[in-house]
Image (cartoon, rainbow, N blue to C red; front, side, top):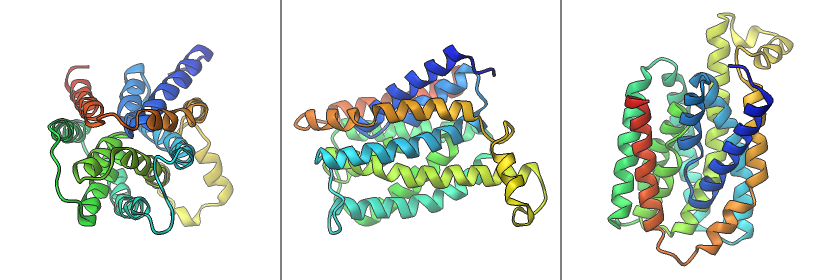
Length: 277
């Protein structure tokens, strides 16, 4: 698909809107952005790494503003930091496995699984169901979310934010933790995608190749769509301060009335996109 100047600006706007939603309520960037880009005509295997890299940058930037707005605290002894480390650690392992699996499993199976999981999570939140908080639960949340992210580019935020809220963690803090946790998960997923593509393209052992050869291949159009990546990066960087500010302003509202329906819509969107679009 040819990247015209007009399309480039449309993708910047798409990234801006999706990252604003994601940084505000802890979900939506990949779950909305990836399907829209695929519908626009981009190859899924170019869309997913582009989403992963841009969201890593957006997540790091937005998490700094969440901390500055005091929506979350990542001090050395805070509960938020412990949850972040658990979700990230579990998610990284799941992400590596899922990125490899995503290149070898029928996409319809993966998208159906993610759509049903996210939809169910939204229903649980809307019903205001809660269970006792435990760090073991957060390990499960990290594994599921990392698996989802690498499989489709989305499905991370709804599970991490929703899982924390269902477990009793405060909504504003859950959003801040999710925003920060997405960054390392996305970076690992992006690197895994690139490495697997390099190996599949050329059977020569990766460690035997010259650095120059690897660099030229990575920046070639056969591995990544850098025009797509740059457009997405511009959009997420521009919006980074705004999402956390909205999170703070809406701090006293009943978040489950916003997050529950949003997660349901995202889950339904994945299923509709899979079977009808």
